[in-house]
Figure 1 (tube, rainbow, N blue to C red):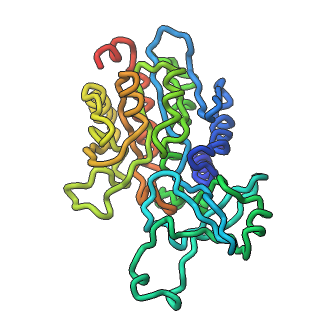
Figure 2: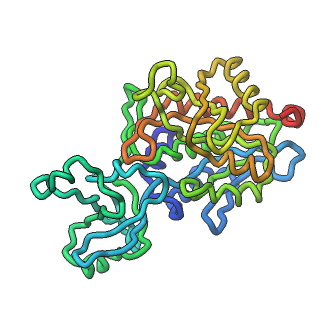
Figure 3: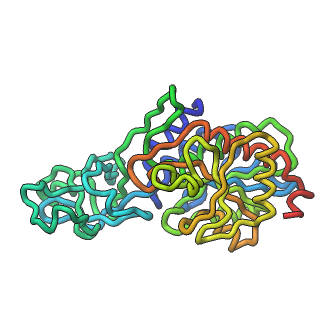
Length: 351
């Protein structure tokens, strides 16, 4: 696929935490020129020069998206659910979803909202708890829902199709956290396939990040990276922050994060990346975050590996409807390519 179609396909793919198979299939198909391995968690990984004496530079992006899972079916045919990943409950009411049935069909559903005609005064300005919400597939009984192949444990994702505005270079869709990072990693691998670089470029397409960075540990154990570049779809802050506090605005380049609640970034690796970006004329942003966390922290803490986060800004992350820009994606890819061109044994030893 061409880049834009690849990003759209990745955004559209069904893949909440624990159910990333469709995304993994796209990754394997797009990297046919590499030998890929898929483990039993559905993590996918590959390497450019396995077994070489070059340092291992692991590019990681997580394949899962925030979604939901069916908890129970009520007698009237509505469906109790639990979130998969960090949702704000304000995002749920009236949102369209797809529920995947046992035989692989995607059944449209909506998160029900009581019409205002039936609301009490106390309900009209209140957001219900998730425990009080239900999905509705238009059924009238539990038996009808079960006949559709929906049951306890059925996974769900927002029902949103990705669109690209070519004139503005703008994507609208779901799951850019972290399918835009998956697209970055694929693109770096493609650009470097025939190029001699001083490192063994590794790819880690990991699962279940949104529920606790679970999958990346398996990939890191297998790949044994020397350093890690974590590609993320990061939360854009340019529509609700004061100008001086904007650290991840659309169209301003990828964001390099000095700190979040999970990791203080290795300052030497961060400086190397920032200096290289300025040298190559790649626009970047820097951030210090009071929240959030990434797979970079898991590998950094578990294996003592220097890690940086290259984040593509995404507006309204962890919701059904998001925006991100092609130029931010391109600059994130180019920074990853340039890093792989300089990360030799000498450079890595200084981190």
